[in-house]
Image (cartoon, rainbow, N blue to C red; front, side):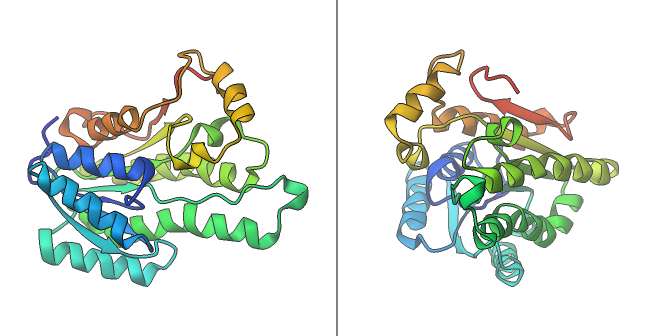
Length: 247
């Protein structure tokens, strides 16, 4: 699964799953674009880590909820590396509340980033992905989009919305040879999971047949496969990487 000379843009990759994906792609030869909204120091640390391990990377600031900023990022990437081969739409946020307490602002803010950001990223980089020899659109969803989750009506809606988006883009890109797939992680040991109360973590763990939370590396390895030429006959799929949870 060599990614030499492939340019890969990973949105929201200054921390969490995105950081792991960016580092893994960089370790396997890709030119990596580490996108961030406000975490400049963290993004530059990811870039430095990739470079220290022999990879090539740059940091690129853009709020994915703002199309003009994402288009400006695309121009920066093109100036440095040329056309993009792989876009990983990873950036996402949560504002968790039970629906009875959720405001319209809570709803729209999550929609704007988690779905609007995917639209913006795909729109800005679409021509590159379509025209690439091995173009790859990879959307990061969640098991929550498959199962639902108490207190996450907004988040679950955005993550399940990616399934239909991915399938549609797969059909529209198919004649070009480029692919679109969706990776739906289960519960991953990141800062976001650490914020979940321990009693809730224990409840979740009981529902995972493999009896552990995912490591970031578990998700990054799957994304690398989807980004590689090895996945060329797979498109429009949702890959559940969730330790055996039902959905």
